[in-house]
Structures are given as C-alpha cells and as structure tokens.
Image (cartoon, rainbow, N blue to C red; front, side):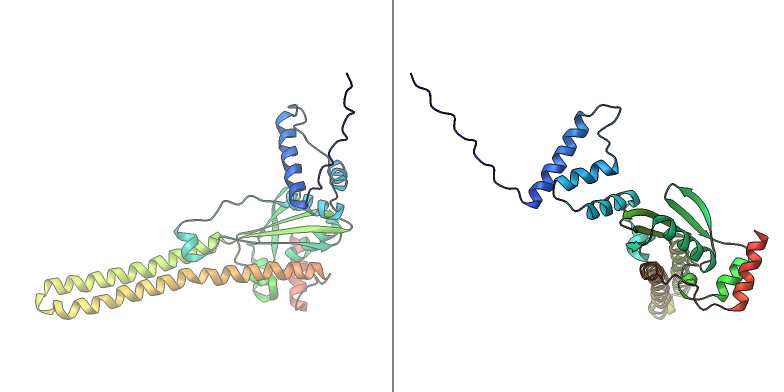
Length: 282
C-alpha cells in the first residue's frame, strides 16, 4: 500500500499594515494575560524598538510613540453646563521639537520663570507643574511685560512634560489649567442674570400691587429679565476667548521651541532689574 507524498505547505498571503497592527495588538493582549505577576509582560524601550523593527516599523516612529505615551495625561472628559456654556477648562498643546530633553526643559523653565513670571509648584518625574508668582515683584513684572508670557497670567497652573523622542529630538506637552477663570466668569454671569431677574420680579410686584398698572408693568418687567440673561450669557461665553488666547500662547511657545527662538520678548532695562531683584530675594 503506497502512501501519498507530503504536500508542501500552502504559502500564507502577506498581511497588510492594518492586519499587522491588529496582530501585534492581539499578541500584546495575550502576552499580558499570560505573563507572570513579576514582569506583567514589561518591555524595555530597546526591546520594544527591536520588536517593532522586526515588524517593519520605523524606529524613529516607535520612539516618538513611546515619547507620546510617556507624556500622555488622562484628563477627565468635560461635560455639564460649565463646559457647554463657558468653554474648556484646560488648554493643551503637544509637539516634537529639536534638542535633547535636558536642553528643551532648561530653556522652557528659563522662559516660564523670566517671561511668564511663574514658579515651580511640584515635580512628577518628567512632568513639572508651574504656577503664577503672587509676590509684588512678580505681579509688577508680569504687568510690565508683554507677549506670550502675559497671555498666561490668567492661568491657575501650567504643566510641562518633556520626554526624549530619539535622534536629538524631544516631545513637549503643555497643559494650562484655566478653570479658575471659567469659574469667575460663570459667577459674574450668574450675578448679572440674577440681578436682571430680581429687577424684573420687583417690577412685577409693583404691577400686582397697583393692578391698574399691570398692563404697562408686565412688558417693562421683561426688559431687565432679558437684559440680565443676555449680559450673563455674554460674560460667561467670554471665557472661550480667554481660553483661546492661552491656547495660542502655548502653540506660540512650541513654535519658538521648534525654531530655536525662545528668547525674551521686548526686553527693557526695568524688567531686567526686576528679574535680578527677584533672584536676589529668592
């Protein structure tokens, strides 16, 4: 009885890029699910770059993806009346810029200290949180200064994250907290709307007491109600413009980092003197 010769294996068709991504993602999930508790499937950056290289991915793109993952900040999704009416509570910007992590972090810190009159609030690894200086000299210098530094004077804090993106480049992420300004705008808008409501209610009360005048008072009472609501809405919506100015300032800061032009704007002898006095007092 003769046996049939073994058939050659059927060649597998090549996988396109989307299929490769899905396979790698699924393999990572399986690896994490079956890994020991000790390592949990952890990989070093060099191992990840080598695996990606074997999969046909560019090492430069992988290093950039690693840098973006390290700078990733999970912000709670904004919903509710405050965000819908007044606008966002956080302005963010991110970009790859030339220079090592140490160089980019150094010039950025110098700019925030000198031009934006800010100081370090706390450090979390590569993430440094800055806040506006509240001393007399800091407020004076911020008022006399100009440019993008002055645009950041209304923020509660600015978080700066700088990570190495490989090949002499760095990934910079900036997150500015503008929620305090939004709360102030909402409070002012609410006060205006409340004032209009009270004025309208008072006029209606007069009309009810003097019934002969009610036909005249009721239409007039609508005016302060409408005016208060309109002014309140306009004040609250004004936060969007302030948030956009902060967003523009962050983007311009990244522009100047990208082009190596992060130098003091509109320098004056008085501002230099104030800066040196601040350093001496510190």
